[in-house]
Image (cartoon, rainbow, N blue to C red; front, side, top):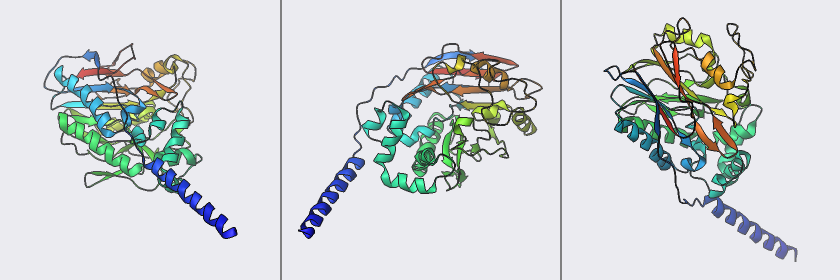
Length: 376
C-alpha cells in the first residue's frame, strides 16, 4: 500500500512539473496595436553642413517590448518620419532616453506579464515563467534588494545581444550616430566590437553606436544613481566620463542624475566635448510639477545651492543641467531626453529639452511621442 501511494504521489508530482514546464515554455504572441506617430515639437537653428542633435522622446508601453521586432518597428517608424522631414543626415546624432534598453528584460514573455495591473505582479510573472534563469540570477544577486537584482540580471546576456542588434541596427539602417539611452547590465564592456556582460554588480550604462552600427568606445556607466536605485544599481563615482568622436563633434553622455553634478561638465570640458547627451527617466504621475526631492541619497555637490522643495522637479532639471551655459560648460549644444509612456502602475514624467547658447528649448506638451531637433 505504501509503495502504491508513493508511486501515485510520484506520478502526480511528475505530471504537475510537466504541466508547469509546458506552461512556462508557452509564449503566445498576441495581437499588437501601437501608435507609430511622432510630432516635431522643437526645431531650433538653421540647416547647414555641421549636423544636428535629434532627441527622440518615445511613448512606450510593455507590449512594445514583447519582441525586439516590435520595438524596432516603433523606433524605426519614428526615425523614418524624421528622415521624411529632412532631419537625418550623415552628421546627425540621435539621442534616446534612459532605460529604453532596460525593459528588454520583459521580451518574449507570457500574456499574463503584459496584462498585469502592477509592476510588482509583472515581475512575479517574469520569475515564475523563467524558474531556472531566475534561480541562477538569485544566486548571483548582490546588494540589499536581491529580488530586484535577480529580475534585472536573469536575462542579461540576451538583453545585451538584443540591445546591440536593435540599436546598432537602427544606427546602421538610418546612417546616424545613435546614443542608445541606457540599459542595466552586470559589468558591461565592449570587447572586439561586441557588448558583453560580466558577473559582478549591475550598472546603468549607455552605449553610443556609430553610423556603421558598431559601438564607439566603452559603455558610459552611471556614476550617481538616485536613491530608489541604490539598493540595486552600483554607484561608480570614480568612473571616467567618456567622450567619443562623431561626425558632428566630440560627444559626452551623462545618464540621468549624473547631469546634476557640475564636476562632470568640467571633466567633459577637459576632453573638449562639444555635445552633451542626457538620457533621462522620471516616474510618477505629475512628478514633473511637484517639489524637487533633492539629490536623493547621493552626495550633494558643495557648489550647488539648490535645496529640496525649493523648485519643482522640472525646474530643477533645467537649472542643474549646465550644458552650453558658460562657465559651467563649454559645450556648444546638448539635449536631455525623457522616456514617456506607462509601465503598469508606473506612469512616466519628464519633458525633453534642448540646450544651446545659454538657452533651453522645451516642448510644454509632454503627451505623445516627440522629436526635438537642434541644428549645429
